[in-house]
Image (cartoon, helix red, strand yellow):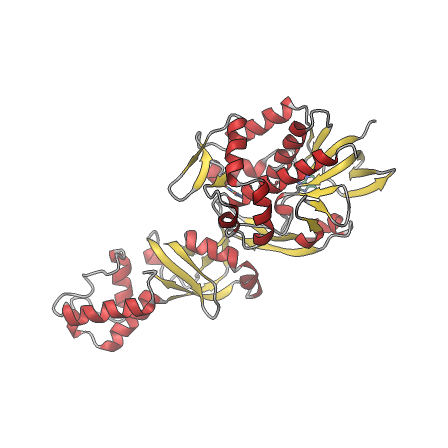
Amino acid sequence: MKPYDLIVIGGGAAGFFGAIQAAENRKDLRVLILEKTTKLLAKVKVSGGGRCNVTHHCFTPAALSHHYPRGQKQLKNLFYQFSAADTVSWFEKHGVQLKTEADGRMFPVTDNSQTIIDCFLKAANEHAVEIKTGMEVKKISRALNQFVVHCGHEEYQADKILITTGGYNKPENYQWLVDLGHELVPPIPSLFTFNDPSKEFVELMGITVPKAEVRIAGTKFLQTGAVLITHWGLSGPAVIKLSAWAAEYLHQQNYRFTALVNWTGLPELQVRETLMQLKLLSGKKGIVTSPQFDLPRRLWEFLCAKSEIEPGRAWSEIPNKHINKLIEFVYACPFDIQGKTTFKEEFVTCGGIALSDIDLKTMESKKVPGLFFAGEVLNVDGETGGFNFQAAWTTAWVAANTIRIKAGT
Ligand SMILES: Cc1cc2nc3c(=O)[nH]c(=O)nc-3n(C[C@H](O)[C@H](O)[C@H](O)COP(=O)(O)OP(=O)(O)OC[C@H]3O[C@@H](n4cnc5c(N)ncnc54)[C@H](O)[C@@H]3O)c2cc1C
């Protein structure tokens, strides 16, 4: 049987985007997608709580790259080839309108991930991209200048291969790629929330503080944004961002560490000056009944109680010792974190095939010419907010474009 021009391994986000782009670029290409499971685009379906956060309204390559703890420098150059603005145009050209939410996340106007799936399936069909499911690739070999792709009893041949198998949590799942000579950066989770089994703060569950700052004690890891107190500990954008930037450190600590929450997001000196001034100027006013820094009343009362400030006491009556405690709990409220919980809206793998093994202008393997990589299989991952799909679209687009140029050579 005539070999395929391109076999894409993995029928997920990067796989479909790459296959469609390659087939659109060169109408004469024979393209095949091999998918391990019986479900195509399974993660796209569940993504963004079923709405698919396709990308982020961040249209400058340099600014966009700052949202990637792994791959920042390399992605910046790739975003000059295919940016978030190009993603918006690509989907528009394929009949999908995106909208931007207040925090910059972009979704299809239908608020339904099926819109993206339908778009991909239609485009793949129009360009005669073949799709085979239930085909787990276990090995790639070479014969007579062709790649031979082995899936159980089936074998397929192709000129070019695009690997888009996504992230795995076990290193052994990458073995067939390592056997081809690629280095693996051991995979660990990114994008998770923090567990505080002490349940000390559980009565505050449901409270969100919009402009907080979360730090990891004894390190420089720090993120700002909304913090949510949950029944298991801490969540919210600031915490999830922090989990991404500190993913490797937190893994080394076996997810046991102290998280310090500054509920105000303000410098310590400003917190101190504000509270000391109140003691001087609002002497007779009740302290527990006058929340500061726009903090939710329940949280303020709780922090006062932790600082041993009794209800009914006036500012002037409180000894400095207790004001100092309050300053500490407002500025650096400690949470004894023992473990993590997967963030159900979006989670990704930190680690994967080392970027040093990839030509980052083309996405071609430096170890195996003709073999390309895109998406989460690489040691690239972003914050939550549409950045992970953007990395998949960009890397797949660049690979497909190189394949167009090289096809037939
Ligand atoms: C619950 C959840 C929600 C998310 N929401 C968002 C979001 O809204 N926005 C965002 O930017 N990111 C989101 N992400 C992250 C995003 O889904 C991934 O980063 C993205 O799907 C990566 O695309 P990919 O094509 O590289 O991998 P995947 O989409 O994981 O696709 C890989 C495919 O390869 C197949 N495969 C694996 N091994 C083989 C093999 N050996 N042979 C054949 N096939 C194989 C897999 O079955 C899979 O279908 C979310 C992730 C999760 C888990």
